[in-house]
Length: 60
Length: 383
Image (spheres, rainbow over the protein chains, first blue to last red):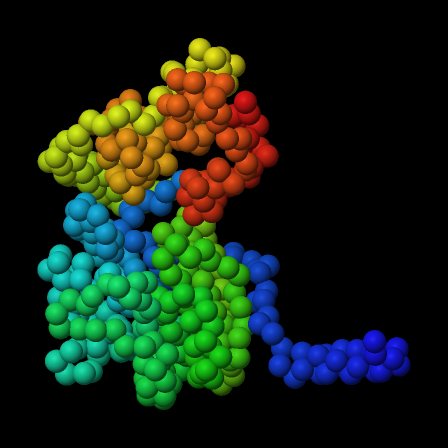
């Protein structure tokens, strides 16, 4: 069984390293989802669709 | 889109397709694709990525895919030349109001294979999408101000694209039966998900600050029944549904009759004498007239829909079609509880298994039944 002091040092080091890695290489971030669809302050739009798979109307 | 265009009539816009718009299976796919293509042409889609089923079905419709200026694919390769069969990318120029500047948006098309067991038709093959991206992205990056990849790929492959390439601004992705998710930022790319079956219209709004970085804002517009149908398109859809239903009926009537074997399903009327209370609950529920819901939509002969509106579809002795097995129409007791033939003959010896909430999820999938929630739905059929 490891001595308590070594376990604590090991755990601290792991946490510190994880935090450092997180700050250096942030994981995928969510884009803001709250936005005003009525706001006219934009230049142009691109609309997209996909995987219609021959369905004129979806199920459900 | 029409509502948005009316609201923002002075804003230029493009409509693009990430792929898998054609139906690749079923003997009714020709008539479905024909009508779908007719509708798509009215939408004036400016860029269409060609995915696995699209190329064969478009060619079957007689569409001149190679001669068109709208289809792209960077990894659909001609076996004759070893080069892309279509343009690997397109650049669309957008005029900005109050400026002589034209903003260039580049689109690269990539597609994945759902089944490696599928063989390619003569004349083309599919290359690895990651390798094709590496080959064509640098050239496109130089030719545009903003680069979008239309990636008809499984989610993990779209993420890999973002991880391996730092020159993509947006990846719009989606794949068969894959549900969408919120936007994600990975490396230098924003990943946006196109909803399965086109249930959500995605929109990206661009604000181009002169000389500075462009700002993009994604939106999702769920295409629910609350949105008013455009009159001309609604008329086309009604025409299409009638024509498709007619052809589906004809196909069904041409199929050889299924030989009558031993009965596999007892039907709900066999359950009624002993389970009167449960039978009454069932009779009042939508399960008991599930086929009528399809008949209203002219889809009672559509194999893509009928399976979840009948009993024993695809099982030995189960529903075949309304002509041959009308007694197995609707979601009867045995659709969920399994065959009750033996239980009906020997009730105390052949017990029926008790079900859990998971039994509902076979048909009430997120795609088909997005509002399904077990507690409230169960309360309508509790027995």
